[in-house]
Length: 341
Image (cartoon, rainbow, N blue to C red; front, top):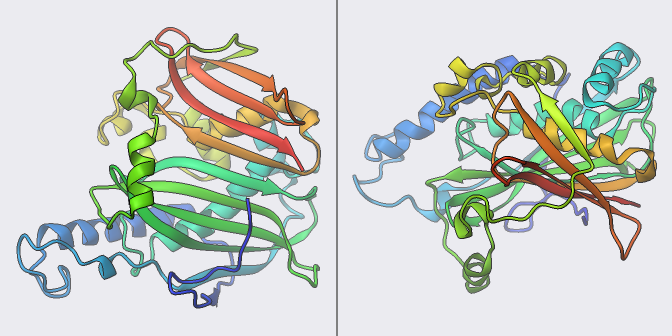
């Protein structure tokens, strides 16, 4: 993953807005519901000034209407001295060793509210509700310990077409407050899909979409051949509530069958980052203090369930691959890599 200075699609630097503290997710989800409703109303009533931007009924949205905010949100002085208990709760839930070192998954939890704050801004063009989490790409460049003072930044970039809509990257960085160079010690890129929105395709994007292999689109259920499992997770119905308690991410789709059904799921689903972070923990100490960690999500994990997991060494390098699936239906849930840096 190559880090570059955040910029607009025209190449201009993003402006920096400094917040006094990391926001709370509960308030952000309330704002996200309101902004999602506003965006939905604008699409349903395109001729209504102020909501539909004055477009005529049936007229497609112009490309310029899908413009990302030209802003980086920044929170300096994030103290970690009081996080030891919370960190240990996370580590026990995710099967990480209980130490004073913040694993990459915990740093994602720390930065996630600021990335969410970008997505609920009035100038963010996509609705938070209904956004599909596709993938993550994370680099941890050294150990971060309880007691350090950090700076967190977040912004959105790389809005691009997807065969089902548009996808966008939410980037978050964690820096040490006392680092004069301001080099990120952790950087995470979360990729999301917003269905039903459209951007023009380039020739290269059209070719890539035509060649893309999507297990759920191209192959009938049960045709994927999984590797030999190295472990099996028994995930109870409260898994989503437990991870929501430590992450703050209490999205209703994760909390209960009743609340998940309101969003079209037959049962509650596990957080994608719970499964990815649990696989990262399964790799263990061999990942080292600095590593790149990637994940791509496939079928959601419906709770309760068991998940078969395989952790394999890369025969051509120092890294590891991992994959998780439903053993009964042979449906892949997620897969990724962990590569020491």
